[in-house]
Structures are given as C-alpha cells and as structure tokens.
Figure 1: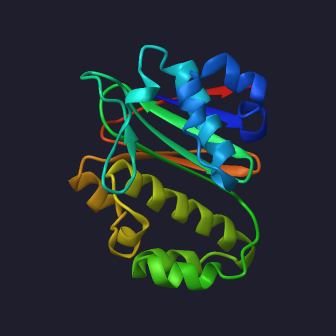
Figure 2 (figure 1 turned 180 degrees about the vertical axis):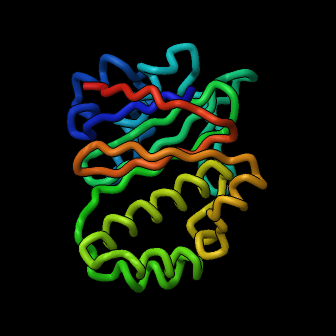
Length: 200
C-alpha cells in the first residue's frame, strides 16, 4: 500500500496551519520567494501523516531528495503543480510521485521529442490530435515519478527508459491517479494499491 495525500498549497501553508503543525525551527527554515509556500505545505503534510518522524532531522541525497534519518522510517516523496501538492508515503521502499495540472503547453511536442523514447513518440503520434496532450502529461508524470523513485535528477530524464520491460527489470511498479484538473503518477519498488487521502 502506498498512501497518496493530496492538498492545497495555499490552505496548508496558511500561518495558523503552519503554527499548528510545525516546530518553529522547521518553519523558520522555509526558503523565501516562490518556494516558501510549497515547502511549508509539504512539511505540514509530513507532520500530519508521519507524526513519529523528526522534520528537523531530514537528510538529502545529492539531487536534493529528502528522507527521514531514523532506521525503519517510511519513505516519502513530494510534488506540486500550481496550487496542488501531493505526498506519497511508502512504508517499505523508496517511492516517487509527480503531479501535473493537465494544461495546454505549446512546446509539448518539442519536449516529447527531446525526452521521450522513439516507441513513446510513435504511440503518442498515433493518437487522435485531441488526445495527444493528455497522453503527453501521462508520459511526463510517469517519467518524473520513476526518476524520483530512483533518486535521480531532471538531467537524467532523456536517458530514462520507462518501457514495461525496463520497469520490470528494475522491479518498479506504477499507477496513475486522476484528480481534476491533475494527473498524478506514483512509482514504487513493489506492487501496490493507492490509498488516497485529501488533507484540508
């Protein structure tokens, strides 16, 4: 089972919510600028859904992916798009999650050309025109979730193989969750069901 927590960044980063859930040292560590609200909202979600873990003692890999330091602690990953934020929690193994608002993007064909495999591009182009943008976002979130599960960076995106055979070879499993207007992809190192929770 992987728990998927969804939330609203503006609501979860409101001062009264932050004061309720976060130690002063954690909220004080939030960066300034546009990253501040997503940081606070993500830490509030962690505090609410991983209450036994210390938010002051997170460690980060060389690509900046955070993790709890306590042996046996759950694994987690956070993603946000616009005002939407998601937290994936896996008790057993590293997990990756990506959320994207399904929105028009003029450059999506070029992005797909740069990052998708030939087989992915072929499947994408074979779809009716009115289905291609949606399929692009599905493909992009899948690649992001797999990359984040493996602890990589966006610089590894073009070389990433997300074919069924490659995922099977690495014992990786994926699922999508749709929550209008967003598509969310989750990747874990074992078969899983999603338990979806909305935090308000």
